Length: 324
Image (tube, rainbow, N blue to C red; front, side, top):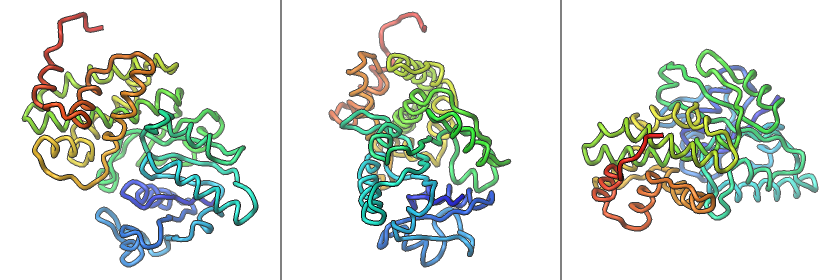
């Protein structure tokens, strides 16, 4: 089976590297002229890893689409635009969009539509395509040190998630079969918002409050998942709570670092998906009438210009009530 990975950022490059290491026939696609891709073409290196000499790099989208399995790791808000390119290329090449196996390796919610990324893919991909999500904890830096972790592959297609989890598992990454695609996608996306909140606490020297943040953050997301029709327990699994160490504490977490830099008034140049997810999550909060105080605090600070210290202090001094 031929697998091509679209997205040459930190995570996409590692996924391609990982799949190659476990014996898959895999190539990595990046746009011609993209700075990151150009660096890989010239040196076969990025800041984290060196690609083997027999590893294939592609800048031709038509060639990329010859694979029957496409792994996608691009910014969440760019997914719909990517499928426009894929469908246009397929139509020019063979006369119509081609059904494939699509594996989404990113976390987010489309802001304008409030759609989960699997829903965007289902709407945009060729009829008959099979769609799965690969989510859960783990940083490239830790995997490259040989530190193993557990992740989840979920899909509405039971056969597909079992195929992929069994095929991609190794001593480095053990995959679980997901049991709630809606809950896993919402949990995975929203944990990045909690990660920004954690970074803000770090920026104020209030890291000791992260225990409260984790407990209450998981609880509020579990209520959102339940109101949306998913299993509230998913928030307590690998998609959300299980990913907190990598998101809330790790120095490698883009979202945590973004939050800390925001409080300190420092620029942060890397993508923090939680920034966009905060907007989408608050739209879902209104749609499903669910109170999400932590997500709302992050949104108010980032989008409404709320004063961060007083906003966070208000969050942690809410009226007393039963914990559950």
